[in-house]
Figure 1: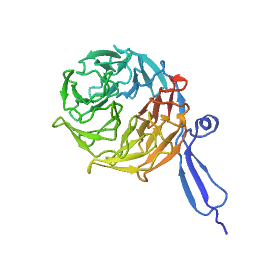
Figure 2: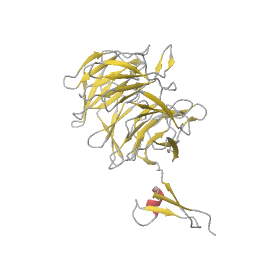
Figure 3: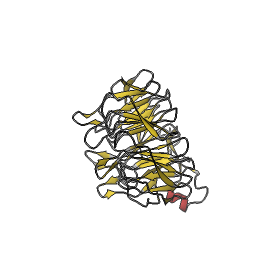
Figure 4: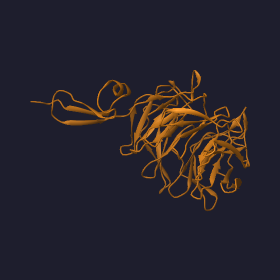
Length: 369
């Protein structure tokens, strides 16, 4: 009597197999065990491949996907910028920003320009902003924000304005917020948040509201509070508190409209229901981490990569969150340990990770998941 199950593993070829075997480089490989009784399908969980290094080592930089599918990387303790071409896997230096900066934000506007805001230079928070034109490959200054800030958030609203909230001005956490008008290149103040914070997250919801979560406030510490910005009234309303205080965390929008927040020293994760304004704990990550990245994939899974663990140190591990089961699955490790890197989802479904730092210093390496 046959009792042992057959296990079928479906996956695409690895990089080495693509180079050394015949047939299509993207064909599925099938593995069988010996005894046949039942079928168990194990999904292939991806791999990381090295792509060309950036020209500059970067941390606390930004990465923006352009309409031509190239990725613009800016700053990270310098004023340089460069473009990644997914078709060739190569980097090209582009025009330098007018001001060197790190811990800034970069927003892709409807007119295809990229708006870079604030940040820090030589430990001084900046109030400058500038625009990158993909058509001319040049930078031009635009209106200054009213308050110098770094480690803030920037969110594009339905009316194409850009909402900037919170941050650090060089001495204290900020609760101020302001709006950028792309048509005029000017800034106007809007309602203050209820809590000053930096290194928080901001997520634009399907109803047009912006959800801000967690962060750090000097004199208060790590925050579990959350609040909503109403673009129609320009006001902030407190919504349900998270179950756990968080900063250097990530926030990802799921297919059902919920917002998954992940990362803190205990590895916990939870999701926000915009309809009820409540938070629900979900499965914890396999590895606790902060300073990581999170990318929502085309299949609905969320890829979390890298970061820092208080016991292990800098991480090269990655894992996938399945919204259907509320669980995390370990996937292939990155080729380098990194924290405060960036992750960009490309048109072909791959995720490009760039830079960051580890115990050896800042990185110029890049890789694809």
